[in-house]
Length: 169
Image (cartoon, rainbow, N blue to C red; front, side, top):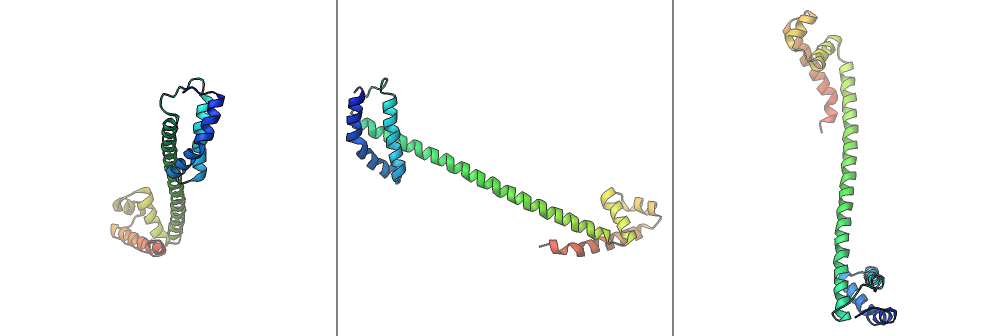
């Protein structure tokens, strides 16, 4: 069948409703069905110069509708996948922001806990944790015994743990 203006109008009037009903059955959505049928007829009209239909026009139109419905569902699946990805990214960003705020809060509380330590405990703690010195080196620099370093470190850690216990849960 060769498509011209007269045959197009005749085919459109004869098959539009039939295709619409079938499209509604495929998609369960009136607007989507209308759009699919419309896309089929637009494609036929735009390609009328090159289009030659070798089967019955009814068979051709129903086959085109099935292909359009499959294409529609593929696009919907891609859209859902992208939406899901975006939601996941937003959730991850929210979690990262939440973690970052929590981390800043813990660091602030840790710094406050260290600041209120007695001078010697704070000094030992900072040399051990921030500079990374061992007990022997700390003892040598502060001219105190290693036992005194251990005792000050134990006191410092106990006081810090006490101040940070609100963050344990």
